Length: 283
Length: 320
Image 1: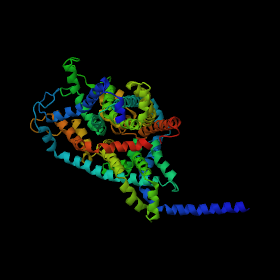
Image 2: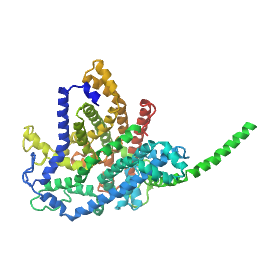
Image 3: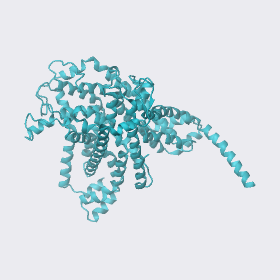
């Protein structure tokens, strides 16, 4: 990198580039910033401004004093945790079996999984299946269905491929059963991949809306995304406390939905990028 | 005779060793069992379920075989054709816009000399990718709303581009919906799209830049003559990988739609959804399964075509 910069003297182009990216970053952040200040603003005349005109927490109080909100939040947390653990289990086990190159039937198993990426039954047959399994209006559907993600399984396999074969062989010579190799050698070496792929699962479960929309009609099983959607559509607006306006309440609900992630994101970002590159290096 | 004998023995040996192999790997088969069960239940049973498309099935009585009637009905529906056309148009334009902008951002980001600033920029532009579509739609329905909380309309009024009272309803206007949809998609995903390009760029040998500099290439020339060609393979990969998925468009369109823009915003997946769950009548699962099967077949052809192109252009490497 140092060598490369010695090629380039600071020029007008660098100045242009710096300003351009400042603008790009602003464009990324302004929509979120606007929602943030509106969530604290109790005026009815919004428009453009940098800070709330009439600061107040009534928007947040309106949302938090609404008990119908706690259940969706808990459901989001519970499904994210169980789903991520289940998804990681299936991906690691599947990825580990798929690198047993000499195992009879390995190619068949790989094709068996890859075929599902080429052809799928579609929305309605899957819905009818869920209905006949009595998984509609149950958290079973939204936890189990996304847990087997072939793309994530292949990412995991790609990572396992990078572990030196001699490690597996010496474990076998030392008398390790496959389970022991898996738990004592493979998993401890895969912490980075587990973090990356676990995060992919966690974000998918936390953000899930489609599966809920399809399989859940009972609002007792809504997650926070479903709840936020019905707040935004105005059908489920929490009663206003104090002088909170509709826009303030909606903005506060959005901020609550993204806040946990926004706090964690700067620390987790490198794992997301690692996960992405796990796929792009080998495909 | 001797040869034959040894051949027989080899075959026998192979047979026993095959059994021995199966035995040797028994724990692996056991470990793989849950994956197989999940795939069979959630992916393979619905594949058999496409047979509903040859029946009339309203969920009350048992499915009744109707042959190709659902497909005939489908091809006569103007709404089906408009949804099909919308799916192709929206997905393709979105894919090319997002990829083109991601490439430009990557090239410029690669020229950034201040590494700290580069890192911060990356953190910021990746962020929207991780917000859910519900949150994204919520944010932009407020930002683009025609009321006085709508930031964009307020900005246009401040700049005297529109008069107060003539606010534009971006997401509720047939002519503006697609443009708004593309902008929202660029905001959400083009930043994250740079990850794969930046990974490729970091692998370029710095000697290439020095050699180009010695040959008298200026910075812009180095960008077009060294950086861009190094990216070409990745660009093709990204395009075909995503082209294979364009029929799946659902959630992003679904959360940004409203009744006023259905003619331009309805895609196949949302058409299936509304026909089944929101048509006001008793749904005919047979018909909507038929539309889904059509969608899956077109998607399948796209994947196989892209795989074929990929194998030809990328030295035998397919995408599946």
